[in-house]
Structures are given as structure tokens and as C-alpha cells.
Image 1 (cartoon, rainbow, N blue to C red):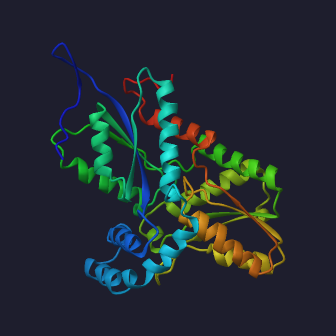
Image 2 (cartoon, rainbow, N blue to C red):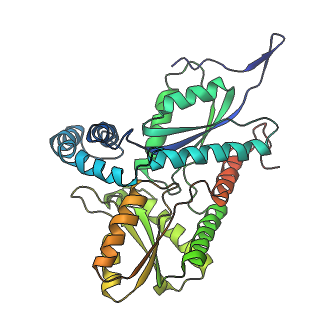
Image 3 (cartoon, rainbow, N blue to C red):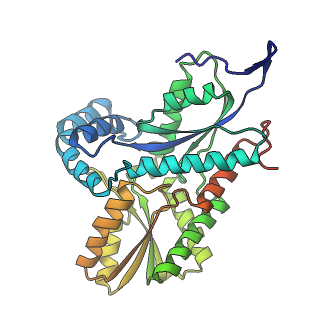
Length: 347
């Protein structure tokens, strides 16, 4: 990648370029087929940030078991939520990208380029960075769409972005947002989305905050993810004025045989239903947009589990996606990240 200087010229004089925002999400297969899922999983699970194992063991696990057994099952799950527009994660991320671009550009004297990239799959980080440079960005804010920091997500995004930058001749000034789990506008957006859903569908007896799981060993290694998830849930529960017995926090999407963060979402739902709780709401604050884990795992599989265990009403609160509150929160986060740059986005 050349990464040459992209400043504007005026009568032979170089003018300063602008600032750009790189949104990074996890990624998705390009199609709900076994072949596409296998290719995606091979890239995803080859990342040492994701499977923190010795290289030989990671390769043995990946090629000896995972890629032989999971693609067909995972592809079937994707087909349950795939639309004519494509993968829900990509579709919703694109909508969020467009909305944030419009929001930021209304605050600045000139349009602020915003580009979406996926850590794994398409669109790749390198292509998105090249587009930002072509748009004249001399200053780059990297905003991973992970509210809570984890080495497996935010850390991996940092690795990938800086790996591309290392191959550039000219490197833009770079700032990196590594979490926003307690950002007041983000907490308000979550709270408002729950209230809005409750007003439309009715209040449930309990509310469960379901976050993506991580191996328990990551906490001992110094990863703040568990504590940041707990803080997000606590802040939202406080704004909703929920008594301690009316809400809980759990972790979904376990993988492999290692001990994972507890309690598990499926076990919590089973326990609540068997204890006589009839209605439950589930919200997934760690997912910026709806995806396989929210639409299929939670809204389909866990809904079925709830009913099988005797529960009656199951309400899934959609991810924030490109809602006004979410876009407003990310606008403030991005503006704060660019504070001191020529664009006066906080003015």
C-alpha cells in the first residue's frame, strides 16, 4: 500500500487535508453458505487475539475440528437471518456508517469522510483506509464498534489497523477510541431503546443484559471486558430504576471447552423460567448493530429455549443500529476523539 500524501493543492501550494473516521466492526461471511462461512471462520479463528493458544495448537484445533464441523451448522444459522440485502451485520453497519457521516458533516465546515471496515472479511481495513486517504484525510480517528474493550475485539482491530499503517510511506495522525462502555450518550441511547420497546410491547418481569462471552482466563490476564460489561448493565439498570431482583447480566456465544465468563445466558433464562418468571426482556448492549448473535442466537434460539422451559413472553430489544440516539452518541464520541483538530465538531 503506497499511502502517499493526499493534501489538497491550490496554485501549487499544499493545503492541509481533513480528518476522517474509520469504523471497524467484526465481520461476516459474504454468503450464507458452508464455503463462505469456512473461509470467514478460517480468517477469524486464525487471529491469535481470538484463540489465545500456541500457534501449533490453534492450527490443529482450527483445521482438525472447527473447519470440519462448524461451517455447515453456522451457515444454516445465517440463512435464518439473511435477507435479500445481505448479512444483517453488514447491512446495519452500512446504515450506521451513512448516518454517522451525515451527522458529523453537519457539525463541520467541510464533509467528514467516514468509512466502514470489517476486521475479518469485506470490506477490508486496507481498502477503507485507502479510501479515506484518497478523500484527503490527514488525520484519522479509528472507532471500533465495540462499546466494551476486549483484546479479542478492540485489541485485534488495533493490530489490524496498525499493521496496514506500517506498510505506508506516509502515515496520517492517528487516534484510537478503545471503549465507550460508560459514555453518557451511549447509556442514554440504550435506556431509551429499552423504554421505547417496553412502551410498545409491555413491561416484562425481568430484564437480562446479554453480552458476548469471553474465556474466563482473559479477566485474570488483565482484560477489562467483564468489568466494563458489568458497569454498562449497572448504569442502564440505574437509569431504568430497576430493583436488583428485576434484572441480571449474562454471557452468550460460548465456544470450545475452556471455562467462560459466567453466568451463561441460556442457563440464566432456563433458571428464571423454571423459577416461575413468565416474561423476560433481553437486550445485548455489546453489539452495536444486529447480527447473527442477536437475531438468531438470542431472538430465535433463546426464545425457543424460554418457551420450552415454561416461560410465556419473550421480548428481544433490538440493537441500537442506526437509531437517532445511537448516531448521536457516536457523533459525540467521534467529535471528542477529534478534539483539537481543525474541525470544530464540539462547537
